[in-house]
Length: 280
Image (cartoon, rainbow, N blue to C red; front, side, top):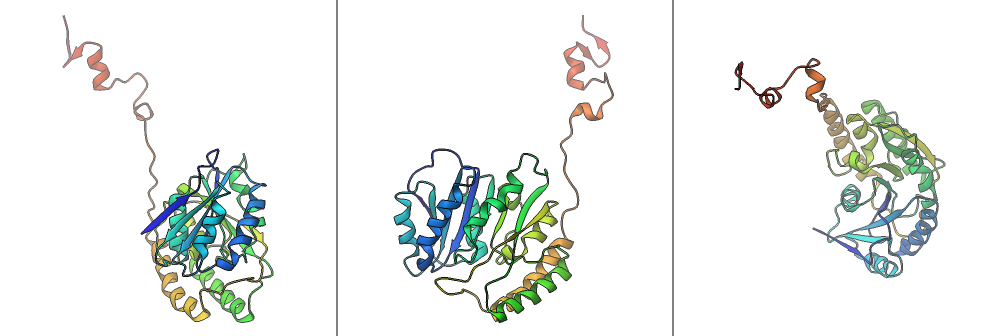
C-alpha cells in the first residue's frame, strides 16, 4: 500500500516527471532537492516525485518540509520497503509527464545530467520508436570490488541478452511513460530495462554520464546479494525475451480492404436496395 502527498498542483502540466527512489536517505534529502531545483531550470515543465521506500529514518518528514515551498515536489510513500524497481514503478504510476527520468537517491547520479538524458526524447525530430535513453557511467566512484563485480555482471548479461548496453546498473535513465507501462513488472527489473524495451520493439539510445562517490547514507546492497538475485533474474529475462509477442496489431479501415466503389451492407440499405429488389 502506498500513499501520495503533494503540497500544491504545479502551475502547468509537466512534460517530464523526475523520479528518485529513496530508502533511509535522510542525509541526502536537502542536497537532492537543491540540485534537482537547479536541473529543472534547464528542462521543460517538470515535476519531481521522491519515493520513500519504507524508510526508518526522517526521509519522508524532510521531504515534506521541502514540499511546503516547492509545488513541483511530490512524495510517494511505501509503508514497507519494496525495493528499487517497486519504488520506480510506483513513481511512474503517479507521474503526469509523458517522459520520465530516474536517478538513484544516494546522489551518486548527479541531477545535472538529467537535461542531457531526456533531450533525445524531447527533440522535435526524436525517432518515433525511441523508448529509452540509458545512462552509462564514466569513471565510476565505487570500491574496487563493486566495480569488478559490476563489470563481470554486465559482461554476462550482455552475452546472454545481447542488449548492446555497457552499464545497465546506472540509475540515470529517461523513457516514455507509456512504453514503460507496457513492460512486465518484476523485482529488480530496473537492471534490465534496455533488454525489456527492446523486447517490446522500442529503440534504445545511450548517453555517457558522470558518477560520484556516495556522500551520505549507506549502500543498500552487497555484491553477494546482487549476485544471488542476478543469476535468476537474468534467466527470467532471457525467458521473457524468447516468449515475447511477435504479432504487431494495426487497426484497419474498411476502405483499406474494400475495392473502390464497393458498398457495405449498411450503405446498400441506405440507397433503398434490399435483397436485390427495388423499393417502390
